[in-house]
View 1 (cartoon, rainbow, N blue to C red):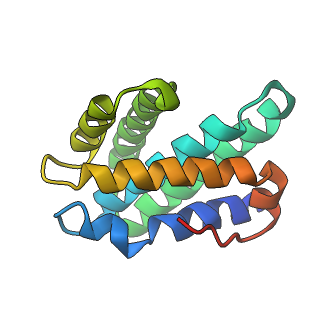
View 2 (cartoon, helix red, strand yellow):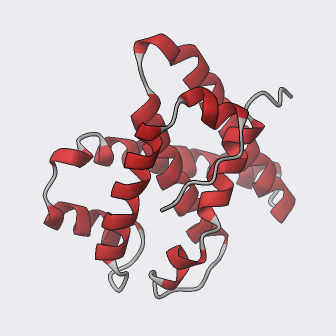
Length: 157
């Protein structure tokens, strides 16, 4: 397996480990919640960096990241049949997230609040997540795709 995109994966994992994300959900930190945060970060990453110039690279990053998710599911101990079902569910969830954030800058605060309540829970601190992911998107725009691929970044969010 190619490791060309290990830094991209590690950057996303590092962001996903932010303890403030879990404190503001009012729920326990577990694999499912961590994966949702990972998919949210990855969806914003793809949204910001998708251009016609780097479609091939973005597809390779997408493939690499979902292979890593599959490996993580295998390490938990799921069997082959369960893994296929879980991966299908996670891919569908990810594509739904991508559709929901497509016009992120243009959607209302109320729709953003509903978005986070839908993916996290009704008791989550939606204001925190709106601010967090707005700042995250701005930080991504300040960096280049190559910096994200070639380095482990210290994103201040």
